[in-house]
Every structure is written in structure tokens, then in C-alpha cells.
Amino acid sequence: MSTATTTEAKDLAPVSAESLAALLVAGERPPRPSALSASLTFGWRAILKIKHVPEQLFDVTAFPIMMVLMYTYLFGGALAGSPKEYIQFLLPGILVMSVVMITMYTGVSVNTDIEKGVFDRFRSLPIWRPSTMVGYLLGDALRYTIASVVMLVVGMIIGYRPDGGVGGVLAGIALLVAFSFAFSWIWTMFGLLLRTEKSVMGVSMMVIFPLTFLSNVFVDPRTMPGWLQAFVNNSPITHLSSAVRGLMAGDWPADEVAWSLGWAGLFVAVFGPITMRLYNRK
Amino acid sequence: MSQHTSGLAIETAGLVKTFGETRAVDGVDLAVPAGTVYGVLGPNGAGKTTTVKMLATLLRPDGGEAHVFGHDVVREADEVRGRVSLTGQYASVDEDLTGLENLVLLGRLLGHHKKAARLRAGQLLEAFGLTDAAAKQVKHYSGGMRRRIDIAASILNTPDLLFLDEPTTGLDPRSRNQVWDIVRAVVAQGTTVLLTTQYLDEADQLASRIAVIDRGRVIAEGTKGELKASVGAGSVHLRLRDPGQRPEAERVLRLALDTDVQQEPDPVALTARLSGAGDSAAEQASRALAELARTGITVDNFSLGQPSLDEVFLALTGHDTHEAPDAKEEAAA
Image (cartoon, rainbow over all chains, first blue to last red; front, top):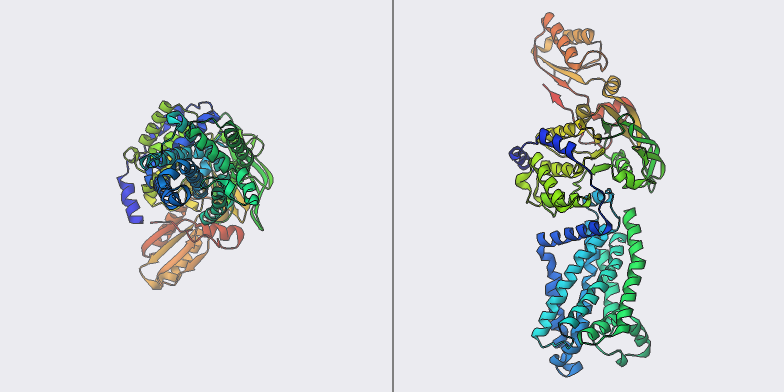
């Protein structure tokens, strides 16, 4: 190690004291960036990370494809007579389920990233404090969009035909991505709160499995016992999947869209400040 | 760069930080004059990094006060953040990004427009001899290159105050010298530097004033001269040709240097401690050699040893640097 370092250090070009001095003198200080500009810059950082470690796109490509294929062919015959029938109902729901599931990786990456020395630097910059986290989630919003597109393409290949056309599909994806962005603040909180990556993963599973399965993603809630219907009908995931289903089918489910956005606002309002509190304390 | 050249860059009074039961920083008072390099010297776990983190607004003090250019680090954190930058003990850059991307990212976060950020990043990479590595991910950089990119990131906007937390720990001597050159260039342009280190010779090379810190407290503070006077200027090691001449040599040395002389286990070796006040170590050593030559004692070999951090601690506290296995004696022959 030390030998390699020495060799490399010798090969390095020398530090130029004159140009360094000139740079130090010439350095004028621009005004601080706006909150938006700082957030977008952190979003750019997230995209650069995807560029350097493209393997991290695995969970937004292979996983969603698996979800679509698995549930369409597993339940299709039993629940709707045929997979082709079932996917008309399932695709918007499974889209919601998969993307909401993918959001939990946010917590894991925040947890591992936050320990790195570079966060000391970010925290010592005079910028809008939440921009680090917002940038993170903006990068993740791109991942959610990729996952949505991948699933739609697979769905179309195996027979999904959205009546809402391009406009309805885009509106559905936009709502889903906006909701997931807001929902992710739960994970940034856990990512900062819990000590290890494993515990973040564990807690995420505990939240995400019941929340996504106990919804109207797979089946009509009217087939469920009353007490479960009470939960399912009021779950944010049910509202979201009804909204996305409606939008993609060409309807305008105003109530469900409003419910979804309301929940989204609530998540940001509650978990955003908690996240920032934890971030400032780290 | 600083408009406060007459005043103090850092002023702390009774600064305290506790982690559970441990008082990591236990009442630190510092007064760092603007425009100088100020060394904070101490072993691992002495509280150096914790102190720096409080001053850089990364940790909130549990007690006492700290001002950076007159701004309170808690109440006016944003003011402070606008004027300082920090190079942490572990690379404070994003290892997944390339050197260029890191600098552009920071440039943007500091408010530069895209073009200006790119230009500045390119100039910095050039000045730091990293142009060839600009497109490489920082995780593939050598230790010396990491330090360079880290410091480059810290001076993207020329800061009024630069914190360097153990900037050369783990570097080979050549890379260490290069970091020292960078620090000298930065301070020559008027930036105040607070440098923490485990190495006395590093503080000696760079700092004009030094605080020695141990167990969360400042145990000595002063100019290099004052500090050395209290710990001595190191020691001179001699090897004689004839072991029979050793008692005579010991007597001559004691007279010439007016100091303690130790017989080493090696029958031809002697060590004499040098006084920190008055003549320099080299002057004292040459006087000793001249005396030995005049009395007909043949010296085969001699070397000057700087006082190690261990010796400084022993002299100041009477105990060892329990946690400083790296503290080493720098021998100059």
C-alpha cells in the first residue's frame, strides 16, 4: 500500500504554488445559491452516482419486471379468469406497489451515505439545510420514473391497454412519482434514526409489506372482512392506486387524486421536519 | 482575504462537549490570531477533532462559547459557514464522483454558475497537479491525491479560515511535504489556518502558535519558541569509536551542554538532551562535537533527534500519550 502510494505520488504533477496563489487571490464569492438551485445540484449528484454505479438501477428494472410477471401469471387465472384480463386491473396497482416498495432503498442509501466524510462538508456550507435531502429524493424520483416506464412497457407487451391514452398514463405516473417523493421522507427519517443499514431494511419491510399488500392493489376490498375493509379503504396506498387506475383508464377520479395528494402533503409536513431535525443533530 | 487581520479569527472560552460520560472537550480556551497558522497538537482522542467540529458548526457545544471572526458558532452559524471551510480527517469529498465532478458540485453549492464552477474546478485541478486524474473517481485516488482534492475543495471559495484536521496522517513523507507547501501557499494569501496534528515537527514546520491539548484540555499554549523552551529542543545521539572513551566523552558533553547525558545499552552510544532555550539544536550539537574533537575523542556517527510528541507530553503532563502509537521521533542525521 505504502509503496504504491509513494510511486503514485512521485508520478503526480507537482503543486503549482504560483497558480495556487493566483487562484486564491482571484476567488470572488458569489451570492449563496437559492434553495431550488442547491436542491437541484444535490439532485445532479444523485444522478452522477447512478452514472458511476449503474448496478443500482437493478432494483428499478429487474425487480419491477419480476413483480409484473409474477403477479399477473400467479393470480390472473384465479382472480380474473385469465392473466390478460387481470393485467387490465393489476398493472396500475402493481405499479404503485412496486414503486412504493422501491422508495425504501432511499433509507438504506441515506443511512450509508450520511456516515461519509463528504456530509461534514455539506453541513458546513451556507446553504438551505434541507437541500441535501431534497436533492436525494429528486434523484430517487428519477429512479421511480424509470421503474414506472419499465413496468408499463412490460405490461403493454403482455396485453395491458390503458384507455386513458398517453395523457392518462403520464398523469398517473406523475401522481405516483409525486406521492413517492413525499412518502420517501419516512425513509430519510429512518435512515438517519437507525444505526445500521440492516435495521433500516428490517424496519422498512415491517412498514411496507402490510401497507402495500393490505390495499386494493390485488383484489377488490369488498371481498375482505369488515375490519380489514376499514383499514384498506382508508390506506393511502388504496387511494393512490385507485387514482392511478382511474387516470390511466381515462377517468378523472378527483376525490382519489385529492386524497393521494393530501396524504403526500401530510408525509412531507410530518416526516420532513423530523428528518431535518435528525440531520442537523447527526 | 480577511478583513479582520488585526483581530482574532477564533476565540473560545470554556468550550465543552460531552459524549455520554466522556468529556471529549473539557473547557478549551483558544485565541487564534487572524492570518496565521495555529497548530493544535495532541494524541488521538485528545479532543482535537471534536473542537474543530464545534468551530465549523458541525457539533453544538454543550458549554462555553466560541466565536469565529466575531460570530457566535451557534447563534450565527450561517455567518460562520460562509467564511470557513473544513478538510476533515477522512476525505470530505464524494468518493463515488470524479475529482472534477466533486469540485463542480461544490462550486455550484457555493453559488457559482455552471460555467464559472467548471472554470474554477479546472483551474484548481491544474494548480494541484490533478488534471490527469480529473475524470477518475476519487475512490481510486492515492492518499496524497485525496488530500489534494480535499484541500482544493476547501479553497474553492478562498475561505477566511481553513480547518485542516490531521491533514497528513497516513501520508508518505513526500506527499506530506506537498501538503505542507499547499498550506504555506494558502496562508501566504491571508487565510487563517487551524491545523490539528499528532506530529510535533508538523506543528513546528507550519504553525506560529501551538496549543497542546490532552484529555479535552489545553495543557500548554504559546509560540513555538516558548513551547520548545519548556520541552527542550530534542537530543543528540553519538556513537564513539572506542567504548573506553565513553566515560570521558560523557563528562565533556555534560560540561559543554550543561545537560543530562545518558549511557545507552550499546557500549559506544551516548544521548544528550538539548536545552530548548538559547542556542539552536544545531549550534549546541556543533559545540559538543568541537569539544569532543578537542579532547581527542573520536565520534563515528551522530544524529539530532527532535523531541517527539511523547517527550512533549512527558515534559508537560508527566504521563505518556497513552493513545498515540504513531508519535515518532524524526531523526535528522
